[in-house]
Image 1 (spheres, rainbow, N blue to C red):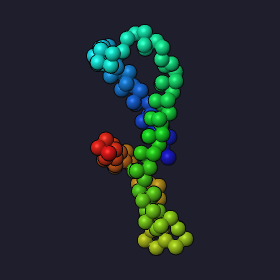
Image 2 (cartoon, rainbow, N blue to C red; image 1 turned 120 degrees about the horizontal axis):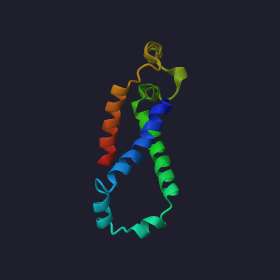
Image 3 (cartoon, rainbow, N blue to C red; image 1 turned 45 degrees about the vertical axis):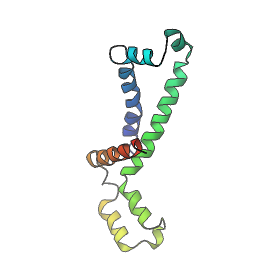
Length: 120
């Protein structure tokens, strides 16, 4: 697990949201179209809103990281029973172990998963 990557991926939606909903970008347009007023905004509990957003972003980033684990896919090919795995699986793990987890390759899988979930 790359906990730093999970933490950064969980914080990024908050940063994008701060920028997106700021009055300098789309905040005033969003308020007008959503019929949101300053009074309505003050009624919201911002700590709960940001806390839930951060928690859900953390969960999403945690589970999406698993899509880039080639070792998970290799284990699934064995049916989850490592005792009866073929020698090719053991050779794969001996050759690569936990080393085949790069940002570039993981970013490709993450982007493809994001596109998939977007159209789901």
